Image (spheres, helix red, strand yellow):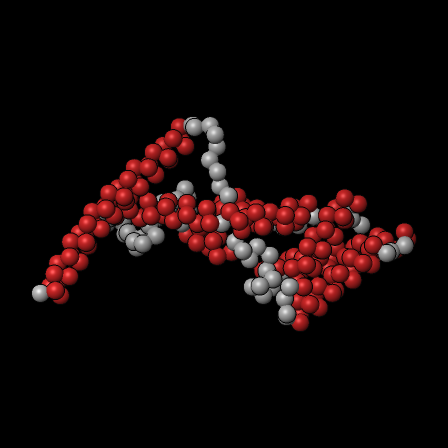
Length: 216
């Protein structure tokens, strides 16, 4: 039998999932919404002697649905708003293992131009920052579901981690590691900015030459 507080949290999660399922025209989603809603209704109207059994049946149905949440269709899947951003952000993680997004993994002894590595790193920093800013609204929409799932004590560790990744904010305390990381990002962004400006000037010159040839 579920504790009273957890039972309430599970039912709240179930009600949120029912709301999500009802927005779909898919017949299976509608059936699942109806099934969960019936289990919730059974708990709310159960007699004292049958309440524990009704709570267990309701919790079992909700837990089963949550376990298979990623198998639901795209339009009703929990956290659907942040999925595209998450997939991109994971590949852009600049604070994780050193790797190069646009360059192949080098073999032992093979050198890759340091400027190219700096540009690759800086580009990931820039894109990650832009995507995190764009994902703020999606994060806000997902917060209630994450909180309800955590209160219901279901598996939501991955979602919590990914939400934190999207809403990542630096600590107010500037320690040595953070300072070093920020300095590195600034230096490489400066390199990217300078090289982008140089390349843009070269392309403008090339465009002017081609335009002159066309006029001639």
